[in-house]
Amino acid sequence: MNTNLRKENILNPLDTLDDWMNEVRESNTQPNPNCMSIATVDSNGSPNSRMVLCKELDAHKGYLTFYTHYYSIKSEELKNNAKCSALFHWDKFGLQARLKGFVKRCSDSKNDEYFSSRDIGSQIAAWTSDQSKEIESLGKMKDSYQEIMNKFQINDLEEAKEIKVPRPDFWGGYDMWIEEIELWKNQNNRFHDRLKFKRKITIENGKIDAEMNWNSVRIQP
Image 1: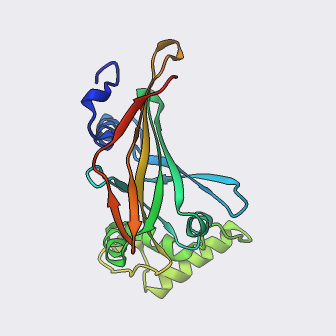
Image 2 (image 1 turned 180 degrees about the vertical axis):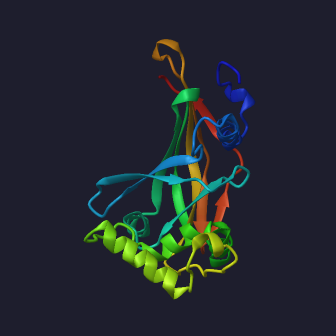
């Protein structure tokens, strides 16, 4: 990896983000190299952040994908305001990426395909949890988990790998279309290297038109 970020060498900053994520993944030093923070705002303008997993990064088109419960707090906030931000930070590598954009719900076919790829325990958990809602105890959660196992006639998770569990309609993903990204690289004496990239995205009749060219500037640490 080069010591400094050179904006003349970065035509698409999402390619760089993809390279960074792959480098962390291949190092086997972090359990979830695709872990990122997603920040939304509620109806009062109060910010809300949580960690999710980036399950897809399409550097060419310019979006990333994460999955969640469609009745969760984050989903309710995204329903009212589709704009959000994301943050990747790999402290061991001295790398960080800050992103801004907006989300669009994934298609049913994309949701079904990803859901079917999850391990069956996670599929059952998706059915079980009414994410972010209050519950009396963990024991109640375990009871709900067992109820779903009974519903799909599953006695043992290890022996149920061939069972096809359908995706619940309240669970799925979002594609976050990226309008702005800042690449950050740690430097000595906190003299950090920062490049900010922007592009224009428009939506008309539900169709997304994203420019392929990014404008870049260097910003001070």
